[in-house]
Structure formats: structure tokens, C-alpha cells
Image (cartoon, rainbow, N blue to C red; front, side, top):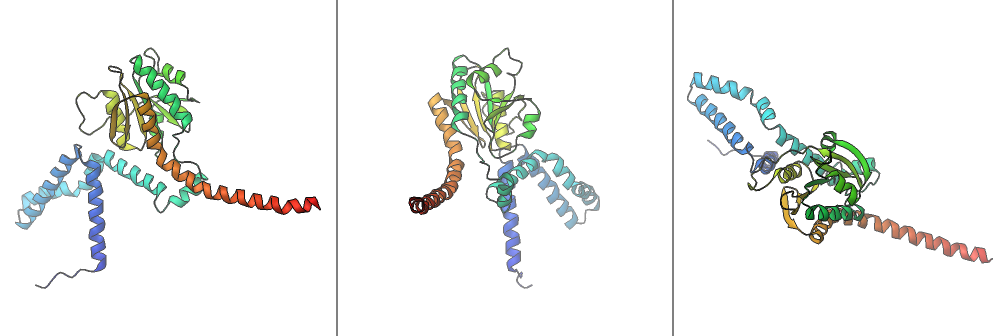
Length: 293
């Protein structure tokens, strides 16, 4: 028996499969999907062993399960598959091979909408609601689409003001139950339904904190939570949550989360702006002598 012959393409093939398995593991780590996937692997290994020992009845039963395995995987892991595709699409829009085409379609539209006009009203409203023990759940859209979440609520399309935010989450308001979505520098919708987290979280987490973690696991949105029981202010982003923030800390955290991409956009636009100013000044200099003449 000779050595196994491997070409460069075989090595590339193995590396690609390893990368895919790694990212799938990252997506399902800490969720119930891990144990389900382990059970599926046990069934597959048992089927291989049964075939190796010519156990026709057992291999036939397990073979039937394996044959419909692809459909079963799609049904069982539909939320994880959706999250993976959303992550893949979001990365493609930012740094992937299709990023250039997305920029052409968006006509240079700024990606991150976290600006002072958005942050300041939210911080002021969160501070007021914290002092009055008014529960709140505010979702701030970034790159990823929140159309499915917005469709579950009541569309508003209004300017962001502290008084409007307080009125939305007022305990007797018909819109207080659910999340408010901020997009494009405006309040887009309220009373939106968010998915609950599938990860293991502390028992003292309430429904708002679980919902905040859930939407952060499926999108790149930033979520501000005000606890109705304690008045504590929290910020959730990309599966992580910072709790017990003051108004100053809340503003700093929102600025930090929205600053990186904003600075990149500003750096890209600074050079063309400077070049335009220089060309304008040069044209003024050339026109001045002609006017004097």
C-alpha cells in the first residue's frame, strides 16, 4: 500500500471544509443545536459501522434516516442557517467581493447611522426612564436588515425625541409592550417582536434582556435596555451585554460601537474633499489676474 497522493487542490479542499466547520461551530456554540448535531453524528457513525459489519437490517434503518438527513438538517437548523446567511451577506456588503457593487447601489450612503442626533435623545430618554422604573427596549439599526422585525410592529416614521420615546414606553401606552426600532436617524416602528436568545443566560435576565440578546445574535444591531424592576441601563451588541450603565457610560458605549465605521467613512471622504478645495483655490488664483486685466 503506497502513500496517499495529495495535490494542492486537495489541501485547499480540506482547508475550506475546516473553515466551514469552524464557522458552523461558532454559530451553534452554546446553543441546543450543539447536542442535536452530536446526535446526528452518532447516527451517521452508527450507520457507517453497521455497513462495515454487513448488518443489513440496522444499516437499512439508519440509511433511511441518513437519506433524509439534509431535509432534517434544514428544518432543525433553520434559524442557525438563516443567521449564517445573514452574517455572510453582511460581511459581503462590508468587505466581501461584492462590496464594490453594494457601494454603487447605495450611492455612497453611510453605513452606520449612529450619530449625535440619534444618541443624545436616546441617552436622555433612557436616563429619565431609568429614574421612573419604566421598562424600555430600543433597537438601533446598523448594516443588517431589520425589515422582518419592523414588520411585526407598528410603523411610526418620526423624529427621535426624548419625550416621544418616553411616551412610547409609558406603562399605559398601547405601544409600550415590545421594542422600538431606530433606523435612518428616525423612529421607524414600535411594539416590535424580537426573537428570544437561544444561548444560556443568567436566570435573573428578564424578557427584555433575553430579547436584546436574541436580536444581537441574528443581526449587528445595537440594543438599549432599561429594566422595569431595577431601572438599570444595559447595552447589547453582537451577543455581548454591558449592564448597569450610567447616562455618561451609555453615551460613551453607543459612540464607541458606532465610531469605527463612521471614522472609516470620514477618512474616505476627506481626501476627495481636500482635493476639491485645492482645485477650487487654484481656479480662483487663475481667475484673479484675468479679472484685474
